[in-house]
Image (cartoon, rainbow, N blue to C red; front, top):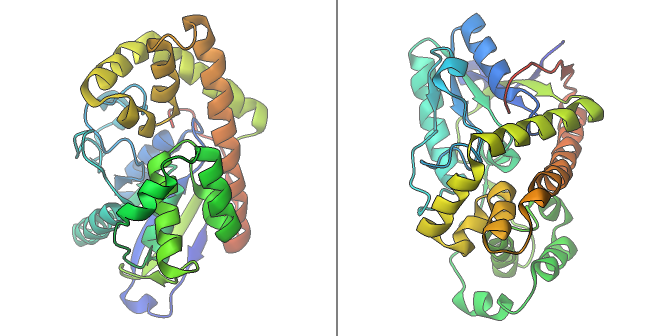
Length: 299
Protein backbone atom coordinates (compact mmCIF):
# COMPACT_ATOMS: atom_id res chain seq x y z
CA UNK A 1 0.00 0.00 0.00
CA UNK A 2 1.17 3.52 -0.83
CA UNK A 3 -0.19 5.91 1.80
CA UNK A 4 -1.47 9.37 0.96
CA UNK A 5 0.06 12.52 2.38
CA UNK A 6 -1.66 15.90 2.23
CA UNK A 7 1.13 18.44 2.35
CA UNK A 8 0.41 22.04 3.30
CA UNK A 9 2.46 24.98 2.13
CA UNK A 10 3.46 25.49 5.76
CA UNK A 11 4.66 21.93 6.07
CA UNK A 12 7.85 23.00 7.79
CA UNK A 13 5.78 23.67 10.93
CA UNK A 14 3.27 20.88 10.34
CA UNK A 15 2.67 17.92 12.61
CA UNK A 16 2.50 14.37 11.27
CA UNK A 17 -0.75 12.51 11.84
CA UNK A 18 -2.05 9.15 10.66
CA UNK A 19 -5.76 8.91 9.85
CA UNK A 20 -7.39 5.46 9.70
CA UNK A 21 -10.96 5.19 8.51
CA UNK A 22 -13.38 2.73 6.97
CA UNK A 23 -16.98 1.58 7.20
CA UNK A 24 -18.45 0.04 10.32
CA UNK A 25 -17.03 -3.39 11.24
CA UNK A 26 -14.07 -3.03 8.87
CA UNK A 27 -11.37 -3.44 11.53
CA UNK A 28 -10.30 0.16 12.18
CA UNK A 29 -9.58 -0.33 15.87
CA UNK A 30 -7.41 -3.40 15.36
CA UNK A 31 -5.49 -1.66 12.58
CA UNK A 32 -4.97 1.45 14.71
CA UNK A 33 -3.59 -0.65 17.57
CA UNK A 34 -1.26 -2.51 15.21
CA UNK A 35 0.02 0.74 13.69
CA UNK A 36 0.50 2.30 17.14
CA UNK A 37 2.56 -0.66 18.35
CA UNK A 38 4.65 -0.71 15.18
CA UNK A 39 5.22 3.03 14.91
CA UNK A 40 5.12 4.32 18.46
CA UNK A 41 1.73 5.98 18.44
CA UNK A 42 -1.27 6.89 20.52
CA UNK A 43 -4.83 6.65 19.22
CA UNK A 44 -7.40 9.44 19.13
CA UNK A 45 -10.90 8.04 18.66
CA UNK A 46 -12.87 9.68 15.84
CA UNK A 47 -16.25 8.37 16.95
CA UNK A 48 -19.20 10.55 17.89
CA UNK A 49 -20.69 7.94 20.23
CA UNK A 50 -17.72 6.37 22.00
CA UNK A 51 -17.21 9.69 23.78
CA UNK A 52 -20.17 8.72 26.00
CA UNK A 53 -19.78 6.72 29.19
CA UNK A 54 -21.98 3.67 29.86
CA UNK A 55 -22.74 3.08 26.16
CA UNK A 56 -20.28 0.26 25.55
CA UNK A 57 -22.01 -2.52 23.62
CA UNK A 58 -24.00 -0.48 21.13
CA UNK A 59 -20.96 1.66 20.28
CA UNK A 60 -18.62 -1.37 20.08
CA UNK A 61 -15.94 -0.08 22.41
CA UNK A 62 -12.88 -2.31 22.45
CA UNK A 63 -11.87 -3.95 25.72
CA UNK A 64 -8.49 -3.63 27.46
CA UNK A 65 -7.21 -6.85 25.92
CA UNK A 66 -7.97 -5.63 22.41
CA UNK A 67 -6.34 -2.25 23.07
CA UNK A 68 -3.09 -4.06 24.01
CA UNK A 69 -1.88 -1.23 26.24
CA UNK A 70 -2.03 1.41 23.51
CA UNK A 71 -3.26 4.75 24.91
CA UNK A 72 -6.67 5.71 23.49
CA UNK A 73 -8.15 9.18 23.82
CA UNK A 74 -11.66 10.69 23.54
CA UNK A 75 -13.43 7.57 24.81
CA UNK A 76 -15.72 7.81 27.87
CA UNK A 77 -15.23 11.56 28.30
CA UNK A 78 -18.88 12.70 28.48
CA UNK A 79 -22.14 11.61 30.07
CA UNK A 80 -24.79 10.58 27.53
CA UNK A 81 -27.00 13.43 28.77
CA UNK A 82 -24.43 15.87 27.32
CA UNK A 83 -24.05 16.87 23.68
CA UNK A 84 -20.60 16.51 22.12
CA UNK A 85 -20.21 18.53 18.92
CA UNK A 86 -17.81 18.56 15.99
CA UNK A 87 -16.42 21.77 17.44
CA UNK A 88 -15.72 20.00 20.73
CA UNK A 89 -13.93 17.26 18.81
CA UNK A 90 -11.79 19.74 16.88
CA UNK A 91 -10.74 21.44 20.12
CA UNK A 92 -9.95 18.17 21.88
CA UNK A 93 -8.24 16.48 18.93
CA UNK A 94 -6.10 19.54 18.15
CA UNK A 95 -4.89 19.67 21.75
CA UNK A 96 -4.20 15.93 21.86
CA UNK A 97 -2.30 15.95 18.55
CA UNK A 98 0.02 18.64 19.93
CA UNK A 99 0.47 16.80 23.24
CA UNK A 100 1.12 13.40 21.66
CA UNK A 101 3.56 14.91 19.17
CA UNK A 102 5.39 16.68 21.99
CA UNK A 103 5.88 13.27 23.65
CA UNK A 104 7.59 12.06 20.49
CA UNK A 105 4.67 9.79 19.59
CA UNK A 106 2.61 9.56 16.40
CA UNK A 107 -1.01 10.76 16.74
CA UNK A 108 -3.27 8.16 15.09
CA UNK A 109 -6.83 9.28 14.46
CA UNK A 110 -9.06 6.27 13.91
CA UNK A 111 -12.80 6.01 13.46
CA UNK A 112 -15.76 6.28 11.15
CA UNK A 113 -17.29 9.65 12.04
CA UNK A 114 -16.44 11.33 8.79
CA UNK A 115 -17.70 14.79 9.64
CA UNK A 116 -15.24 14.85 12.55
CA UNK A 117 -12.36 14.18 10.16
CA UNK A 118 -13.77 16.82 7.84
CA UNK A 119 -14.08 19.42 10.60
CA UNK A 120 -10.55 18.80 11.87
CA UNK A 121 -8.80 18.87 8.49
CA UNK A 122 -10.99 21.28 6.52
CA UNK A 123 -12.37 23.56 9.20
CA UNK A 124 -15.75 24.18 10.80
CA UNK A 125 -18.71 26.13 9.47
CA UNK A 126 -18.95 29.70 10.72
CA UNK A 127 -20.63 30.10 14.09
CA UNK A 128 -24.43 30.14 13.93
CA UNK A 129 -26.69 31.07 16.85
CA UNK A 130 -29.74 28.93 17.65
CA UNK A 131 -32.96 30.03 15.96
CA UNK A 132 -35.88 29.10 18.19
CA UNK A 133 -38.49 30.43 15.76
CA UNK A 134 -37.12 28.30 12.92
CA UNK A 135 -36.93 25.24 15.15
CA UNK A 136 -40.60 25.68 16.06
CA UNK A 137 -41.52 26.07 12.38
CA UNK A 138 -39.64 22.88 11.51
CA UNK A 139 -41.19 20.84 14.32
CA UNK A 140 -44.20 19.58 12.29
CA UNK A 141 -41.99 18.32 9.45
CA UNK A 142 -40.90 14.69 9.19
CA UNK A 143 -37.25 13.73 9.07
CA UNK A 144 -37.67 12.94 5.37
CA UNK A 145 -39.02 16.44 4.71
CA UNK A 146 -36.16 18.01 6.65
CA UNK A 147 -33.61 16.01 4.69
CA UNK A 148 -35.26 17.00 1.40
CA UNK A 149 -34.89 20.67 2.30
CA UNK A 150 -31.24 20.18 3.15
CA UNK A 151 -30.60 18.29 -0.07
CA UNK A 152 -32.11 21.11 -2.09
CA UNK A 153 -29.77 23.65 -0.50
CA UNK A 154 -26.65 21.57 0.17
CA UNK A 155 -26.55 18.10 -1.45
CA UNK A 156 -23.08 17.36 -0.04
CA UNK A 157 -24.18 17.98 3.54
CA UNK A 158 -27.36 15.98 3.01
CA UNK A 159 -25.31 12.91 2.04
CA UNK A 160 -23.21 13.18 5.19
CA UNK A 161 -26.12 13.33 7.64
CA UNK A 162 -27.85 10.45 9.38
CA UNK A 163 -31.41 10.80 8.01
CA UNK A 164 -32.83 9.66 11.38
CA UNK A 165 -30.84 12.12 13.54
CA UNK A 166 -33.40 14.87 13.82
CA UNK A 167 -31.23 17.17 15.93
CA UNK A 168 -28.53 17.31 13.26
CA UNK A 169 -31.09 17.75 10.47
CA UNK A 170 -32.62 20.75 12.21
CA UNK A 171 -29.19 22.19 12.94
CA UNK A 172 -28.19 21.90 9.29
CA UNK A 173 -31.29 23.84 8.23
CA UNK A 174 -30.57 26.41 10.93
CA UNK A 175 -27.11 27.03 9.49
CA UNK A 176 -28.42 27.18 5.93
CA UNK A 177 -31.16 29.62 6.94
CA UNK A 178 -28.75 31.91 8.77
CA UNK A 179 -26.29 32.29 5.90
CA UNK A 180 -28.44 32.00 2.80
CA UNK A 181 -26.02 29.51 1.32
CA UNK A 182 -23.45 27.08 2.62
CA UNK A 183 -20.81 29.28 4.32
CA UNK A 184 -17.10 28.88 3.81
CA UNK A 185 -15.20 27.02 6.46
CA UNK A 186 -13.38 28.70 9.31
CA UNK A 187 -10.19 26.73 9.88
CA UNK A 188 -9.45 26.39 13.58
CA UNK A 189 -6.69 23.83 13.49
CA UNK A 190 -2.97 23.70 12.92
CA UNK A 191 -1.60 22.41 9.65
CA UNK A 192 -0.96 18.69 9.47
CA UNK A 193 0.95 16.32 7.25
CA UNK A 194 -1.74 13.70 6.90
CA UNK A 195 -1.19 10.07 6.03
CA UNK A 196 -4.34 8.07 5.28
CA UNK A 197 -5.11 4.40 5.67
CA UNK A 198 -8.51 3.56 4.20
CA UNK A 199 -9.93 0.13 4.99
CA UNK A 200 -12.74 -0.77 2.61
CA UNK A 201 -13.54 -4.52 2.62
CA UNK A 202 -15.44 -6.21 -0.22
CA UNK A 203 -19.21 -6.04 0.11
CA UNK A 204 -19.79 -9.69 1.00
CA UNK A 205 -17.03 -9.73 3.62
CA UNK A 206 -18.31 -6.52 5.18
CA UNK A 207 -21.89 -7.79 5.34
CA UNK A 208 -20.72 -10.97 7.10
CA UNK A 209 -18.72 -8.95 9.60
CA UNK A 210 -21.66 -6.64 10.32
CA UNK A 211 -23.95 -9.61 11.00
CA UNK A 212 -21.36 -11.31 13.23
CA UNK A 213 -20.80 -8.12 15.20
CA UNK A 214 -24.52 -7.59 15.72
CA UNK A 215 -25.04 -11.14 16.92
CA UNK A 216 -22.21 -10.67 19.42
CA UNK A 217 -23.67 -7.34 20.61
CA UNK A 218 -27.07 -8.91 21.24
CA UNK A 219 -25.40 -11.79 23.05
CA UNK A 220 -23.39 -9.40 25.22
CA UNK A 221 -26.45 -7.52 26.44
CA UNK A 222 -27.36 -4.81 23.93
CA UNK A 223 -31.03 -5.01 24.92
CA UNK A 224 -30.22 -4.52 28.59
CA UNK A 225 -27.90 -1.59 27.82
CA UNK A 226 -30.55 0.04 25.65
CA UNK A 227 -33.20 -0.43 28.35
CA UNK A 228 -30.92 1.36 30.82
CA UNK A 229 -30.29 4.19 28.35
CA UNK A 230 -34.01 4.55 27.60
CA UNK A 231 -34.93 4.65 31.29
CA UNK A 232 -32.16 7.16 32.00
CA UNK A 233 -32.31 9.39 28.93
CA UNK A 234 -35.75 8.99 27.38
CA UNK A 235 -36.72 7.96 23.86
CA UNK A 236 -35.82 11.25 22.13
CA UNK A 237 -32.20 11.15 23.28
CA UNK A 238 -32.02 7.39 22.75
CA UNK A 239 -32.89 7.87 19.08
CA UNK A 240 -30.02 10.35 18.70
CA UNK A 241 -27.46 7.84 19.93
CA UNK A 242 -27.43 5.66 16.83
CA UNK A 243 -29.46 3.09 14.99
CA UNK A 244 -28.59 0.18 17.31
CA UNK A 245 -30.26 1.96 20.23
CA UNK A 246 -33.07 3.25 18.04
CA UNK A 247 -34.03 -0.20 16.72
CA UNK A 248 -33.79 -1.92 20.10
CA UNK A 249 -35.81 0.96 21.52
CA UNK A 250 -38.57 0.06 19.09
CA UNK A 251 -38.58 -3.46 20.54
CA UNK A 252 -38.68 -2.12 24.11
CA UNK A 253 -41.73 0.00 23.21
CA UNK A 254 -43.48 -3.03 21.72
CA UNK A 255 -43.19 -1.76 18.16
CA UNK A 256 -41.32 -4.82 16.86
CA UNK A 257 -40.59 -8.39 17.92
CA UNK A 258 -37.32 -9.59 19.41
CA UNK A 259 -36.92 -11.95 16.45
CA UNK A 260 -36.91 -8.95 14.10
CA UNK A 261 -34.01 -7.22 15.86
CA UNK A 262 -31.09 -8.89 14.09
CA UNK A 263 -32.57 -8.62 10.55
CA UNK A 264 -33.59 -4.99 11.09
CA UNK A 265 -30.27 -3.99 12.60
CA UNK A 266 -28.38 -5.77 9.84
CA UNK A 267 -30.35 -4.03 7.10
CA UNK A 268 -29.99 -0.56 8.63
CA UNK A 269 -26.29 -0.95 9.44
CA UNK A 270 -25.72 -2.16 5.90
CA UNK A 271 -27.40 0.98 4.55
CA UNK A 272 -25.19 3.08 6.81
CA UNK A 273 -22.07 1.20 5.70
CA UNK A 274 -22.93 1.83 2.06
CA UNK A 275 -23.11 5.57 2.75
CA UNK A 276 -19.73 5.35 4.46
CA UNK A 277 -18.27 3.51 1.47
CA UNK A 278 -19.51 6.28 -0.84
CA UNK A 279 -17.66 8.85 1.31
CA UNK A 280 -14.54 6.68 1.22
CA UNK A 281 -14.61 6.52 -2.58
CA UNK A 282 -14.72 10.30 -2.71
CA UNK A 283 -11.91 10.55 -0.17
CA UNK A 284 -9.68 8.15 -2.12
CA UNK A 285 -10.34 9.97 -5.38
CA UNK A 286 -9.55 13.38 -3.90
CA UNK A 287 -6.30 12.32 -2.25
CA UNK A 288 -5.17 9.41 -4.47
CA UNK A 289 -5.27 7.06 -1.48
CA UNK A 290 -4.53 3.40 -1.97
CA UNK A 291 -6.95 0.99 -0.29
CA UNK A 292 -5.57 -0.87 2.73
CA UNK A 293 -6.33 -4.52 3.41
CA UNK A 294 -8.93 -5.22 6.05
CA UNK A 295 -7.56 -6.19 9.46
CA UNK A 296 -9.34 -8.70 11.68
CA UNK A 297 -10.93 -7.02 14.63
CA UNK A 298 -13.61 -4.63 15.69
CA UNK A 299 -14.83 -1.43 14.08
